[in-house]
Length: 286
Ligand code: CP
Image 1 (cartoon, protein in one colour):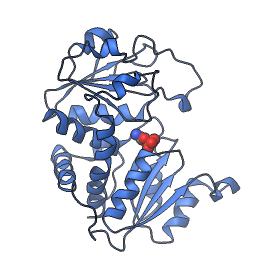
Image 2 (cartoon, protein in one colour):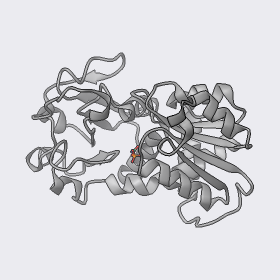
Image 3 (cartoon, helix red, strand yellow):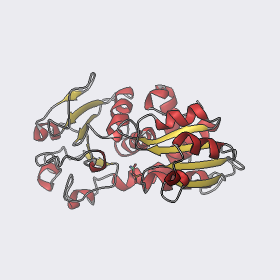
Image 4 (cartoon, protein in one colour):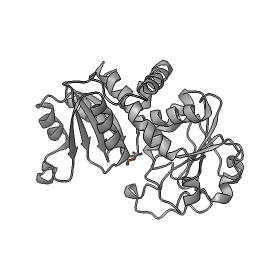
């Protein structure tokens, strides 16, 4: 595998190998495995978690990291995505980590350059490394993935996190239920849809809350009834955990008390992003 553009690029064995390798990275503060490799974070959209964890992952393995962000770049002078990628490719970048507002942009970079490409979020399409770190976190917290019931809640329609996560969970044998306002959640082949949030909550092992993707639509959707208040959190089984890819909007899709609860795995997800991305970088360069 030289690119990771979609969760569908990975077989089940490859996912398991990546999770195992990520676990073995837990105590690595520095090794020289990627010495002399150049990783370019090519970000056309804002990011805190993904960009910084890719940077840390690459630096922990000795790579050189270049951070491109659209603000301050020559795209303001009319340079296209392809010409930007060709320009950086001419400087012998080994891996492009691409975030872009248009679905398929990382695949375009992969077609036009000789570098490996990792999708760091493309429009409403996918965010595969987020899904991998989510699988890792579920396994760490609950001991496994197969047979669990995971509810993906809220703005499913516009969420690339949901796009990759539902594929990843199904691949690993979990049951997925999509729930949220009707205009944001529609039936998809192979996935259950249930608009009765309280009844779904009672059966969940994981409630995965989504942020309303306000940057991708002009409509003010009302999440009332699908926000995870303390009262609704208490309807979940006692072992069940809460997840969210971040950034979190406290008091909108999830109450502050729930964000900070010991059964919230939100900061575990952030922590695990580094070790998972170390494994992904190693794999695309192997
Ligand atoms: N989860 C996630 O993609 O967060 P960032 O937008 O901060 O990278």
